Length: 68
Image (tube, rainbow, N blue to C red):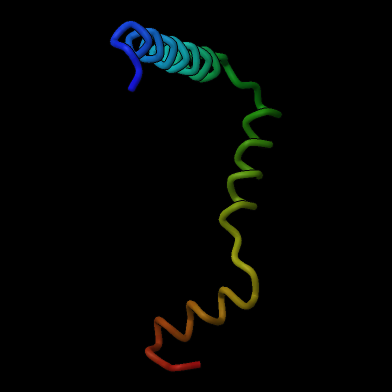
């Protein structure tokens, strides 16, 4: 079992890492996005939401209540 000092040091290190990541995300969110970057991000988002032909078929079968 780690000593209280070691445990506190580990907790402090974990907290510092969380704060660093949070600062990076905040900085990234505050950066103004140009038209090109915005369109590229939206295209990536749309591409990630696309379903394959097989997934569409399965979803349609579920919606219609058939056992395809």
